[in-house]
Length: 289
Image (tube, rainbow, N blue to C red):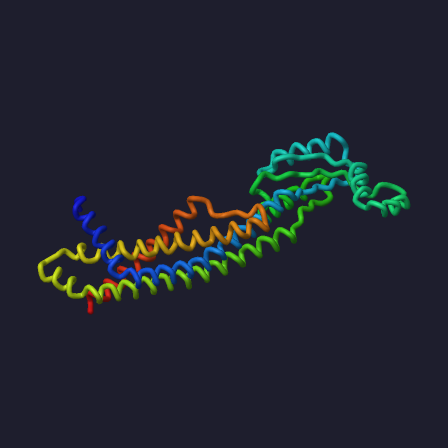
């Protein structure tokens, strides 16, 4: 396919859009608003996932040692912890430091600790995980392995909190998937019907092209390009409107995250592909009628 043919098909697709600009504008607006709902849901999911990940990165894993663990054995445990996958830093917290921190957290009620005969808190190691490693599956595996070590009494990492957070994110992902399927199907439907109206309007021209022996590509490709353009414009409209909503929300909730450039490009290309699919379906039905 040479340059002139490609240029002709692009020009033909543009002409079709201009001739039916009213129907095209309404179609793009409907699709853009539909996609806006999906984009906002995706943004909410993204920010919930980011917030849970940030909160998880601030949390620490605590490995409590048994009473009577000697210095050499404690040091060996520390070295083994540092050698584990996902571990970034290991800090020793003595029982005296732990009691002092607990006393400080009690504030005015710290006098209650005076009744203790001895320090009941054990020595412990505070583990900072690498970014992205604070996931329930990773922590569960790490916890089970450490609990088998001699000298370790208990491992804590906020298991319930992580499981609930990940369950919440999975629920949002499932809702996004269902909503996305519904909206994407509606986009294909809207583009298909819009293109069908344009084809009906140009039936005479298409019939003449077929009579003079014009290749199918000359008839089909401009229509497919037109649908792809509608899908891409609708996606950019939805992303632009969602950016306005995001900027407004970010004024009241600083630190929110928006899609990166790659995600924006992929979303626009996918919507263009949906538009092309809708146009092709309309053209296929039209040529068979």
